[in-house]
Amino acid sequence: MQKTQRIIAIVLLLLVAASVYGIWRTRQSSSPPVAKQAVVNDRSLVDQSPLKTAQQVAQLASTHDERQFAQEALRLANYDVDIAFENAIRQARLHPPALSAEGKEAEAREQRAESVLEAEQDRAKQLTEAESKAPLSKKESIEKDLVQVQANMGLAQDELDDAKHALRRAGGDLVGRLEQQQEHYKARSKEITVPTGPEQPDQPGLIHRIAQWRQLHQKQMQLWQAKSDAEAGLVALVAKHDALDAQIDQEKAAIPELSRHSRKTTTESVPANVPAVQKTQEGNTTLLKKTQELAENQKVLSAFNKRMDTKKQLEAEYAQWIDLVAAQQRTVLHRSLYGVAIILAIALVGLSFSSWTDSLLRKLSIDRRQVESLRTVARVSLQVLALCLILLVLLGPPGQLGTFLGLAGAGLTVALKDFIVSFLGWFVLMGKNGVRLGDWVEINGVTGEVVQIGPFHTVLMETGNWTDSGHPTGRRVTFTNGYAIEGHYFNFSTSGQWLWDELQVVLPAGQDPYPLVDAIHKKVVQATRESAQLAEQEWRKAGKSRDLSAISAEPAISVKPVLGGIEMSVRYITRAAERYKLRAQLYQDAVELLGGKAPVEAAK
View 1 (tube, rainbow, N blue to C red):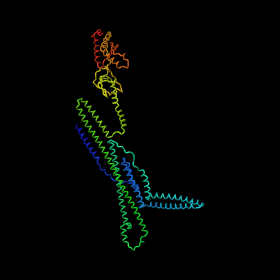
View 2 (cartoon, rainbow, N blue to C red):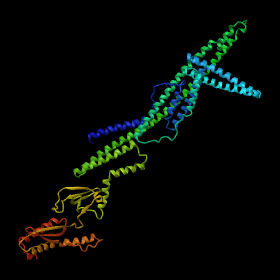
View 3 (cartoon, rainbow, N blue to C red):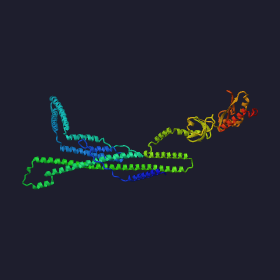
View 4 (tube, rainbow, N blue to C red):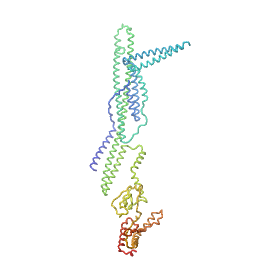
């Protein structure tokens, strides 16, 4: 293993160890962070933020347990706001706010309108009773008066409504405004529900785990904010409760009749000769009013206690919900660290296997170029395999496996079209009409002898075209086997690799050419007799479906006049491998005949 590979391996080992430690740590409980407290500022007369906050966090519930917490939080927040409205209405009735000049004028208008409306209603009641008792002659007059009174009642009602609106615009009629807001709130609260439906399926893959952890973290922060709001509301309620409790104690202490200690002191200190008539009716009225006010304040104090208990319960619900989300986060982080450890292990195993492959290839006693090729193929294959496994860990297995395989197959078919066609072409070349090692073929205009046939490629030793000498050029030409399906090829070889060759000789003018023509023809026939017979037999076997008895492999001769003499051409059959040697021998015989070294008669 090289130095760089060792360093990478050490780093990967350290990262794997850190991932294992993180996996172990995520199994332990951890304390969630403390969120900053914040109080929601609501423009309504009663703070409805607890229900709004509960509604917002309820939309985040994604599991059955979370939905139970969300439902309970909504119930407690709704109950809290209901008590707040009732308490606010009670306090508004007990302590109405001071009115401005405009408010006082509107209040006076309202009182006048109410007086007029009550008077008209009484008048209408009287007329109705009088109509039922009056004789027939007076009923028509009473009915007219009743219609007029009803019209006056409509006008008075309109004036009363207008006065109420003016009073509310001026800041008065706090009870009416609170009751109106309470009605709107109750109508909206009926529409608040917890999301239902099946739970989200768990998506494998490290990327999905990271996204899931981020969603849980955001959910946890919102829950901490809701819990902080509940705590802040509890603190505010405690302050109001303590202030009102102290005020009630002071008011009780100021009235001897309402304080046990004061009553005892008063009873003991009052002389026996003081008559009871000194307690005037006015004092009794004042004491009764004060007692009623204290009773209302006690109800307000009791409402504060209920709201404080509700706030505590709401805070506890949020705390339990936060713990549940934190447990989900730890589970997601635990699985994510497993994914990281698997990726690091894949990288470490791949690195080790690459080093082992390099050491194994160095021991092979083959050509250096082949060793480098094998090393490259092994390294690339290993990297592709490792990348596929890492992507599988990162993205997870595809959900729609059939669709994924179909799309992947279609994509690979388009991308690897040439390789697929070449592989199928290899089967064609291995067939009866294919090519074999040593065959002389022509592929895409290149001729040569087949030296290698693989599943994807055919290799030729180039020999030039058939009119040349046929000597190898020393170049290896490689073709993908797709030519066997998409293109065409010429195979000049049967089992004997027969081909036609031609001998051309120019006979000098001034002498009889026929003896030389016959002599050269006999030489050719003598040299190719055996080859011609074998070629005819093989051709007849190759063409079983047709009658090839008329085909002859005998040499054919042609003579034509040319400038300076007569040109003689002889076409004959020969083996591809023996073509050049036979042609050289025949040219030598022709030259000897032309030079007179062999008499023509002897040639006969």
